[in-house]
Length: 160
Length: 420
Image 1 (cartoon, rainbow over the protein chains, first blue to last red):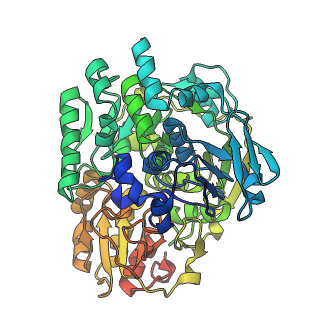
Image 2 (image 1 turned 120 degrees about the vertical axis):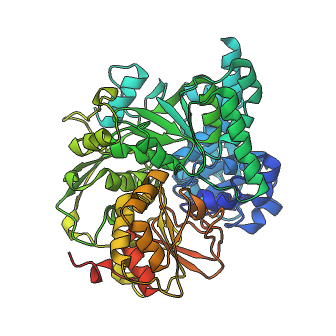
Image 3 (image 1 turned 180 degrees about the horizontal axis):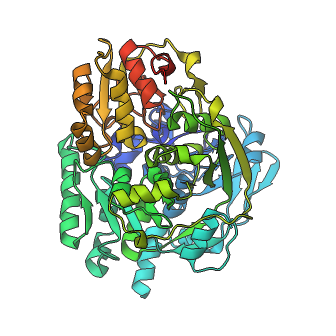
């Protein structure tokens, strides 16, 4: 498992350049361009189970959901950041990508540390340090548990 | 309660709400643009089976890559037109009508006291007329097309009081750049931002510029309390006063943060590469050479913006090493600019007029930059790669600063040219 560490204000153009927004929308089309202008090695080397660690305001900028779809598709286990931009945060709930807002954990990490995440209990272990993060409200967990907003909506429509 | 609390209580069917509470709401409209194709493709089966929630609910505007720049974007537009016809979507605006946010306000779809969501981050613009509006992603837009409802978290609120009066040559854009530079690109994350104070000096155009950039400081929405400036604007575009009910914050509302700015001290500001909060006073960056100027977009493409541009460029020529691109925010703006001679002045000065759309702002086409080039733009974002090239630099300014700089070929303080 690899930890990809980035700084503050990682915006949607860095995560997925705007010039592709109307030509790439499927996970397969998105994958090769993920983080293209930020870290050209990411798309080549990212593996299932990897974690992204970042500073403040991760995902700021456009309402572009391709970064979330792409990160989910390549198997990113979680993004741990000091804070997230709100549209990105909602998009992650809608795709079922785990985001963890925990500034202490980001600060505690140093190169080579192992990271373990227990999403159910809301605990992150970094080396020998433990941090807790709050659970999402039940209304929102229901969306994530249904496998994302589309499955949730489709289920709701079927019940009607 | 604050504005956000009051409007979310109203739409959530609650008497009282507090920040952090989740409410289920049915917005008045859902805005989607060129991303409509990707949105409806997610729910094709359901659309066949259950149909669209309501034919007047979606507002579909083609603006992001117009006219189509490639076969792929042309196919994209075709899918959208077919969808609109098949499902009888009432509010459809094909290419050339305008940038979606401008269209929402001009067509009276965003009104005081209404709640609007859109699959575009600058949906927060409609706080200019006292609406609650916010951006969402494509997946959520797809779900809304089917059900017409979603959840919203009641945000904390920030109150920004604007005191004093702007001096000549300083514009609404400078105010919002100043504020973002002060509180940072994440300074208002998850918050509703209410502007108050001496706002009578700001037209709806000015308020639009400020609210438009709310998201650049992380805000969920931005709001100007409707007043006689709002109502006379709406009267003028033919909206009956009976069709909206403004919502105002209570006097005893509680805010997470209260900020005050003295506008009489403000100067022209520039957001430097590669983030919107990397803001400097114009004299700190004056003299930097530019290759392209972009005046327009949903941030600064209205008649008053083009008017000041024309005032500055009248009888002058754009610097030979600069390309000046003008992007009117809508057909209506374009027509008015034609009627009052603005377009003629700009073309004679050497400007290239682009169709009303998003074009170069997101680097999809029309005015993409080359490596090593520098653009001074009146848009809202200067992220690395934003205008299609990651080795180019984007600076953001007001239309006055951009117009004066286009003449000199270097970033220039507009106050040197505009003397009252």
